Image (cartoon, rainbow, N blue to C red; front, side):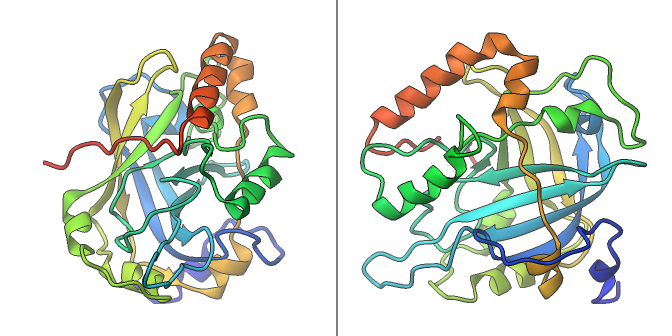
Length: 275
């Protein structure tokens, strides 16, 4: 595959601007492969034409006393004759001390900030709160609402929360990564086409914490850091309000989850086990 193939990806915004968060990333082609064991609709049934952007929320901290980074992924999948659809995964708004990008599971609902959150992280969260009453939660209803050929789904079925579980092989491969400003280059060089990067699990409703495997994300190209990914490729957030408009019975439980997380020092979702 030529190194510049991603430049010709058919979905671009047509303009550039400076990203205020997740300004630097590494991009690869990816396929969403369903395991066939669920009844979620739309692209949850499978989507061959996607991009994954692995990025950091901001510059990593290389302070020897407290190194940290905020890893996350953005996913963009094409649908014929209409706009693409997007999903996101993040471990936590305040990140992690490990420089292993695959140290933890990522989720579409990174936990709300607790009482111990720093002033800086809280200010970032407050910016997102100007657009949504659930600033740390991102919806998946749009992903379920159309098929890959652009056909509307009459009754979209989608999970409450997604979890992206890195495979044991990639987690082990980057174990012991030293703190470095070039961590995204380390990640990009480690990825191999036609391998499973994340196993995808779903929490069906806010009333149960149970997670069920629904598919996987399979790399379909090498991974590159590029000006294209950092200046021309954008991912549109789906507000949680859109999901709740279709599932109003989830509202009270969703609000209760937020209140619980905000009452903690800082809550983190436990990682799924690695076999």
